[in-house]
Amino acid sequence: MERNCIISDDLVEEILSRLPVKDLLRFRCVSRGWCALIDDVSFIRKHYQVNYSFRKLDDNMTYFLNHTPPSDFSIDEFYLLNIQQGDALTVDLTADLKRDSRVVLPYEADQYSILCYGCVNGIICLTCTSRKALIKDSFLALWNPATREFKTIAYPNDPGLKFCHRSGIYGFGFDLSSSDFKILLIYVSCGEHEDSINQVIYSLKSDSWKQISNLPADISGLPVGSTDGYLNGVYYWVTDLPQESGRPLHFVIVSFNFTAEVFKLSTLPHDAISLALESYSYQKIALYKERLALAMSFKVQDEQSYNIHIWVATQLDDFGVPLSWEHLFNIGPHLAKLYITVDTILLNGHLHVSFVFPVVTPYSDGCQDFEAYLYNHSTGKFKKFESRWHSWFRYVESLFPLSKRLIQT
Image 1 (spheres, rainbow, N blue to C red):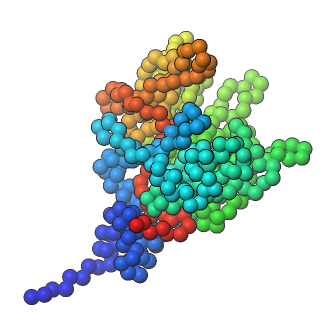
Image 2 (image 1 turned 90 degrees about the vertical axis):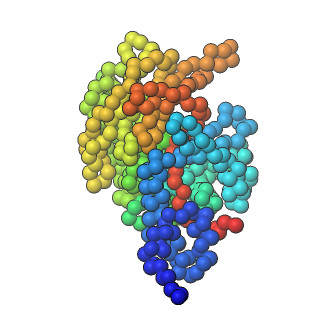
Image 3 (image 1 turned 45 degrees about the vertical axis):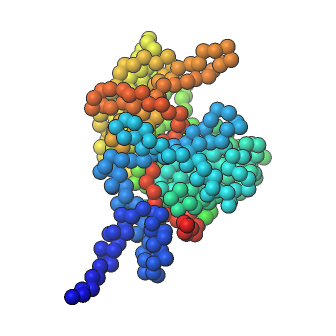
């Protein structure tokens, strides 16, 4: 006896949302209905969230890494990293980036210095700077390694555009209300009489830049992110306000909401402020088990050793501004000839920490080296971790398109 097995549309969607991107791109050819479903923004967001949840539950988060070799003649390197029981498993994506960018780049990828400045919803934000140091040959790019899409983005059309230590890509995020990827850029524009600081934001949907002007004037500069500082549509930095005569150093948290496109200021935890006033410190915003975190290392007075403290935000307002903090733990003191820095915090809460020390040779004036470790707070143990990666961003593959859908073969 024959039976017709009919699977409901809801069940089909649930099954498809659990499949790899490569398979879904092929399944777009099955029917018009499947193609419409797979290209629907609601399904794309669901597929990403389902796969992110699986990674989180299995403690199997992948990280996108960027390494810039010291030699100007060496190309930048890109990897996916997965850490299993403290051991690193890497996949080299350098050749993938060269392949995907070949269609749109004026020259081969190794003619550019390419740096990663963020990874959101499987999309990677890059700066491509000509090794000839010509701004006209430099641009931004968005890359989806899973769909093999690579899109270049021209810098704002400003004849006075100038890059300096106070300008650069400061935030890459996702507007949750409009499902739009946005890039925040702060740069110096050279005028006839004086220079001006400009804040502009790029929208992938409109493929254009627009001016915004609500950056608090007393912020001296925001650090360029090298790890996850983005959470639920808001990007975060920790920075210091300019010092006035006789005024102590004052640190603040700066947040930028990609939907409202506004900056907000908030204070650090009170105990963090008091520690920062007592000794020299290094600060970094990161994510600790999907919560906004502040990592700070403090020099122990009169010694060459440091303590590391971790706080997490316990309450955020409607704009994502932290209202209260909780001190989780501290590590140390540990000896460091120069300083200790937290490079990133893994999803399971392990810290990737670098102990920085000077290179002592006749030809190494000012050069630094480091030893990297993974720190497990539960056991209180360090495990040496060989790494030279300059940026760490959580990565889960996604279907989010950049321009047109490319079907993999």
